[in-house]
Length: 203
Image (cartoon, rainbow, N blue to C red):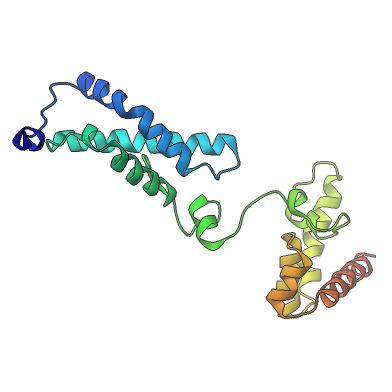
């Protein structure tokens, strides 16, 4: 009996492999759903589940080529596939850990990427326009802003330029205050000063 279990599993065709894989597919999908249940976005969660299934199928084929029957350990196969996907592994490659648009980089460094209006902490943020596309302002006004803003920013010290950059990203006053070791009231005061200084600069 032991010899029969450990004997090499030779599969005659891809069709037979597919039939065997379909037998364990529900367990792999269930494992993936549990592994990525914390993902809020339904479409993103579905993509991660699909990547897990695809990676499991790829490994299932490779194991069969080596004479191993993965139907004997579907939970282990699903677990490794889900962990690989969570770590940035994809069927068509690996996510780049240093690319700001990569989910892996965002997960490792604890940040997210989004449109400025979605994350702005101020309803009247004069700096948000620097990072958002503006299709309503006349083209000459847009050109003037894109020329004036860098010049205005250079009038401030290095620390203030970094602080302005953080405010432009829509970070909360509390987070900016902690990063620059300032009080929240001081950050709010500087925000107002930047606003007034910008208005004076563009008069």
